[in-house]
Length: 299
Image (cartoon, rainbow, N blue to C red; front, side, top):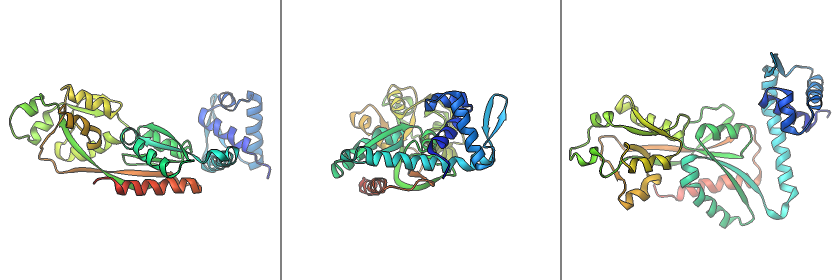
């Protein structure tokens, strides 16, 4: 075989950066060497992989066809390196988790996994759902745990566990102190504290509430659920968050769960892996543990 992993690495770097100059910086080569390597790959395949648009290189149909295969090849090579370069240290896996899962569920789950697999190492990437899905697609993590719907084509999506969403407010908020039964009209007129666009929690909350409230007026948007619950406790508005996120402030009396005419709000958390990834034994073991751990959690 004449195609090399280095050529595929440079191809991916050009696809990511849009030029051989920028790609050269990513792979520690000169621009001329990166350009020559890309030209050689295109010559071996007998096709152009990019359209030249001004100074930018944009993937064409042939390039898009090669992209997942190149990612798969490099990911397999990295897996071999991790497996054999330091075998005494045990396996190392990269797990992505969207913000709520990463902040409130992942630490306990990884601790339990390490107790059963003492030689294993797990590196975690915590970001919003859209970024975690992108990381799975781009082989930046071995698998992802997300809290919102996944719209990518190149991943396998598996329901992982159920989560309950509840509406909360500060004890001194007018919706609590007014002494009236909470109505849908009151919820429609309230100031809501929401996650940012692209967040799985934001999408899940909108999906759960808009059928009843018709719209969801946002007073403030925050980049994580911890900021939302703290702002809610300060009386800036009301919010709809996972029970696992707010249970500590409910227990301390800084937040109260509102009795509303809404039905019980639940959502799925999902496990996602790339369709192009061949699962190693260590990854298969981790995914199996994730499933078992989720089944043991309180419903």
